[in-house]
Image (cartoon, rainbow, N blue to C red; front, side, top):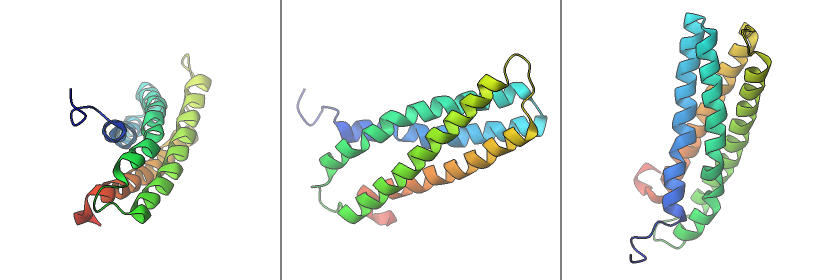
Length: 151
């Protein structure tokens, strides 16, 4: 296998970074369904998905810096654009970890048939909306690193 065929950290970052973006949005949709149907079980599924999504964000975040090392010398890559993406990623990552931890607390507190209070579910929905927006913004900034046509 030649170096051109080898998977590098930029490939890994591109592979992993879709998981928190899509996972958060998907969990938000499931949470909306859970609130609409008033289903405790569906809320728990959504909370579990948020926990898993937060865990899957770790490799996306950790491969970011090494991916920057791969692409920074490529034509058209701007240090300023990369820095904006990196700053947004830090905020989005920290927010998702916080939301995932909050969802985990909900799973632990409201297990074995205990009802999830409406305020807790709404708090998670609002948090998921905010985190989903942060993830979308971070993804947009990440796309700008190599796609000058969207700058």
